[in-house]
Image (cartoon, rainbow, N blue to C red; front, side):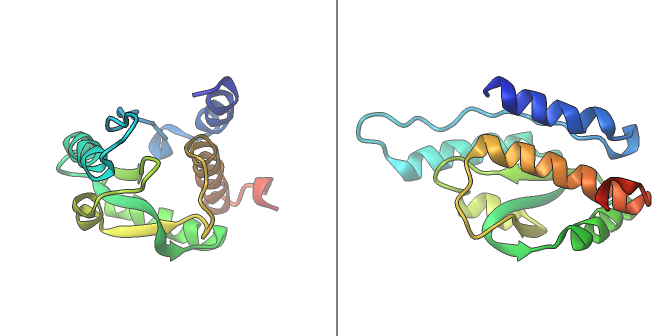
Length: 144
């Protein structure tokens, strides 16, 4: 990832408390050559994603067809996630989206936007929105 992505994500990660921490696990993209087999690449990505998800994690996939939340609604979701006491695996797909096997594992589908967003920007956007949601929950002035 470019330095601006790392810097942006780190800015919000360091602001979050330990009980609301954010960690990114990078997985390799499926192989895409000159004449790529997109379904095979998506399956390789799915295998890696499903292998990285822990049994006790709640899976929330970022998917254009998912539920769109306002920041306030995200804060409410985050509070529900905290009360459930499970770690949340927010799954961001590769350039061709997520396979059906990964989507089937999800307990929730979250849409950031109907726009197609570049993966690096999604990382920064998710980091900032989770920080903003936390500030709402803590009645912190950042959101205002």
